[in-house]
Structure formats: structure tokens, C-alpha cells
Amino acid sequence: METMMVRKLAVFLLAFILLTSWFPGVGATKAAQSPFSTIIYIRTGQASVNGTFELYGVVNVYLQLSNKTLIEHFNEIAKENETLARKEFHDFIYDSVYKPLRSTFEERLKAHGISPKFYMPQGGDPVYVGKNWSAIVSFLVTPFFFPNGTYLSTLLAGPLTVNVSGHVYPLRWGKLTVFLPSGYYLHSASPKPGETNQNTLTWFKGDYIPSMSVYSMTYLFVHFVNSTKKSVVLTFDPTTHYVQFNATFVGLKPPAPVVEMLIDDFRKHMHVVGISAKYITNGVRVVGVVWGPTAYTDKGNKRIWTVTLKFPGPFDNITVVHGSYILGPNGTVILTFTQERTDYRLYALILLGIGAGIAGFFLWRRKRGGTASESESEPQESKSDRASEEESASSGESAGPEEPSENGSELNSRSDEGVEPSGGADDEP
Image (cartoon, rainbow, N blue to C red; front, side, top):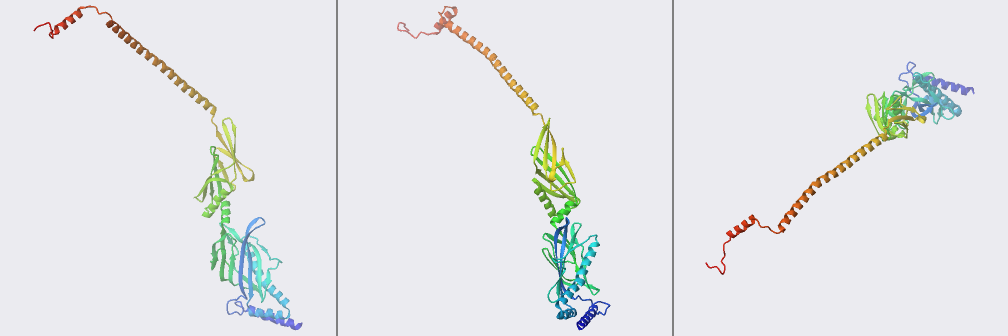
């Protein structure tokens, strides 16, 4: 028993001497070397934590012990008690890798006023010991990406270190891969990744968490809506029962995909007849025509219209032309418009009067026209009668016995004088 303890003590002392020789100023002749071959995978996702939307990161650090002295140390222990050797290796990884990583992440998030949350794998142990002195350090930290203006940025960027026997040195990895959530895209990174494949980012040979800024269309859309002042002007057309709206979002100029999402949001929540959008100074204007359930009541010469609409979200300012509004249930807006009605009965009486006047005028014209034609026909008839009477008189005179007259005798005598004898049988030449 004493021999085993002496042997273990000798091995620990040897390991300590060799470990301390890795650091500058402590018998080292070159830069500190990591005792591990390391690969890191970070898979990010989105979740609601206590009602708050957050992007978390599941960190998996794959470690393979590469320092020969430490390998020999744990092999010697395993020869006598493999369970003890694995436990000591587990504790070695826990103290030298997990605890420094967690402490680094906590300090960086708290420096921005954020209290991080850590979650362990099933069973509660962040260290899994594999074969041949390998291990996996796993834990979930939230938030991994944090809203930073228009985009989401990681606040964990910076160098990574491990602590071996009180000595701190870089945790060098051969490859670091970050998986972004579905629908998220890289906006910027420093340093830039060596490989980018859709939402998978890979860096090679380093000892840090890179600075990253990511976004999703949904996040940009929500950020745009929450960061702008929203106003809408509404006008009702009683002939078509359509409502025209003119909505402005001022305070942030979004990218084109967000404008498309804004239009789609109007279409999703409203009965849109037509809609369009354009950029304005530091914002967007959306103009459209929509339909909503309508009703009306008549009061005197006024007609009161009510229209119920449901917008995609609340507006800071609502203006109703020639009307008013109240907020209804389930996010609806009830609009009230007043229309001045014309008294059609008066118009009908006026039209009837005009029609009667026109009809009377034509009847008068017609009657007057008939009288004039009769007065014109009477003289013509009298003239014709007189003419016929004169003709009858003249014909009556010629038909009676002819009285001798001087004119007649003269005519006969002239006829006689003008007639030369043709020579008769009794006459001689």
C-alpha cells in the first residue's frame, strides 16, 4: 500500500515538473503547448426562456490527451485501478477545461450586464470520459447571441484558456465549427471563417471564440416594427365600401426582404384589394385599399357607417378622415364615418314638377298649333267657293239664248267682209 502511494506521488511530482516546464519563465524554452488535441462544436438555437426570446449555444469540446507525460501518468494509475484513473482524469478535465470555460463566459456576459444561465447534459455532469484518455465537455449557455442593434452578436468572443495546476495557457483547437439556427445568416465575423456552408461556419487553428454578428428575416422584421413610429390615415368610400389606408413606419430603413414581409403581413391579416410600398426618409410608406365588414344607420339626412378592420399590429397614431375610431376586441379597430345624405324626396318632387311643366307646355303647343291650322284653312275654302260661283255664273251666261247686239252685228259684218266668194255653180266669173 505504501509502495503504491509512493509511486503515485512520484508520478504526480514528475507530471508537475513537466507541466511547469511548458510555461514561459518557468524553465520553458518555447511557447506554451496545449496538452490536448481539441475540436470545438457550437450549435446555436432559439428558445423562449422565462417568456424572453433568446439564442442559446450548446458547446461541445472534444479533447484528446496528447501530452505523453500525462498519458503515462494516467496509465500508471490505471494499471492498479482503472476506475480511479478515469475518475482522476475526469476531475482533471473538469478543473482544467470546464471550470475555466464557464468562468470566462460568465465574466464576459456579466461585463455587459447580462446574467448567463448554464444547463448541463442529462445526468448533470458536463464531462464525459471516453477511451484512450479522451473526453467531451458539454454544456448549454444562454444567451450566446444577444441583440445588438439591427443584428444579433455574440458577447462571448475572445481568447480561450485552460488552467492546469494553477497555470493558465491557451486552449488551442484544430477546428471550431458554429452551427447557426435554421433561417439565420452570417452578417459579419472577425476573423472570417475558413469555410461557410449555408448556416455552418468553420474556422481552423485558433484559441478563441470569434466575433460574430448574425440575423434572420424574422428578427429583422420584428426589430424594424419595434424600432419605428407607426402612423396610419384611413379614408372610407361609401360607394364601394372600401377603406384606403396610408401607413408610415419611420425610424429605421429596412432591407427589401423586410418590406416584402411587411406587405405579406398586411395581406395575412386583412382583406387587401391592392397594396404597395415605397421607401421614404428613414422609413417606409405602405398604401393600400382594404375591405372590412360594414354597417350603417340613418339619422335624419346623415348616414353613419361603421367598418371593422384588423391590422397586423397596433399603430401609434390613427387618423380617420371625416370619421373616428375606437379599439375593438381581439385587436380590431372599429371605424365610424359620417355621410351627408341628400333628401331624394325633394328631388323627386322637383323632377315631377319639371316633368309636369314640360308635359303642359307640349300640350299647350299642340293645342295652339291645331287652332292656327283651322284659321288658315277657312279663307282658302271661301276663296275656292267664290271661284266656283264665278265659274258657274259665267257658264250660265253662255248657255242662255243669245241676244242680238251691236257688237254681234259688227262681228258678223266683219266676217262677211273678210270672206271672199269661192265661186258657186250659179255665179259666173
